[in-house]
Length: 462
Image (cartoon, rainbow, N blue to C red; front, side, top):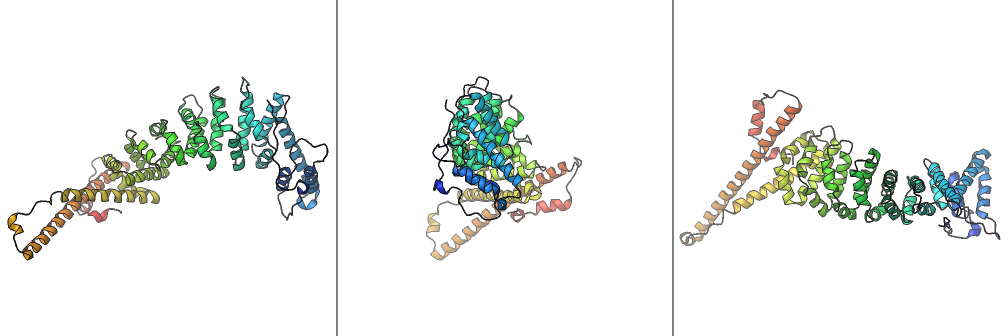
């Protein structure tokens, strides 16, 4: 296998490499990067020409206006030479051991140094590292060294994230995990987490088949805690892209998320994933099809010590309530009204606003049902006697009937809303009494009873 790679040519005239107008103050690393881009790389030397880029870089580094002292210049030159030597190791065609050593050096040097990540990528280390994933090393030490080198190169560097995916790393990683689990699988999960943070990578990773692998890693009882957390976070990144929701629905991720909702270490992330899925129609169907999905989400409203989870759960239910009549009915049957009323009193500002919007949606739905019921009883035909009456008498008779019907309809609606509010307030009081650890024989005061008995629809926080 050939480990060599060719650096891309710099745009512009090679003769003028490095001859740019510089203004003080300027980061010294910027000069190094520009020089590497325009001739300071690790291309095989042309015997007929000198490496003008490296010479110009050395001259720039020696100019006192670009650094504080000569020691700093020498240190920067030494770092650059070290990085070039590492890149040369990865291009070695004679010894795989040298290449693996270069991969380990990349991992070490890029762990906490953002400049090293940029310069090594410009020196062309990404293609040979990706090629190492195809190694036939039975111990998998070579592949693991490459995976962690790529992982560190992608940290906080979007250009490197895109370059790694463009080099074909995703499919090579997926092929790798079919051969070996354990440390290899954890390293692949960590890479997917980092690479999926870039928006342009999300649809590529999602369509590659990585989602079933991540779901499997999340459910693996033998996986480490870190691997499970990385899998969940990677799935969250991928769920941001609507095109990936269909791939998520092809797995059993949603039921698994509901089954684990309650684990406080993961619940916030789980609700975030569900919040992304609910934005797609197919995703809403997938959520509503899970048994006890609504009671589980409504129960989150009782997590007073986790306002963020309350906000996320209220968002999921709010979207589903506005989009589907059947979902609204299922929520009402699950007892969402009393929980929403409590949330409007005790929740955060955002949770209160969302709860109020849901109550308004449910109130409008209730009003429509009452109108439909009343309209069904107003279609009795006129008798022949009434039809023969004079037009004036008929007009007044119709107006009186309409007024009576309107009064009956409003009366029934007000009664229904009044009853709903009274039941909700009583249920809410019982919840608050229970949380306050008061005695079970607590009886609401007469003042509270008078409030609930005289409440109207205006008492709803719409």
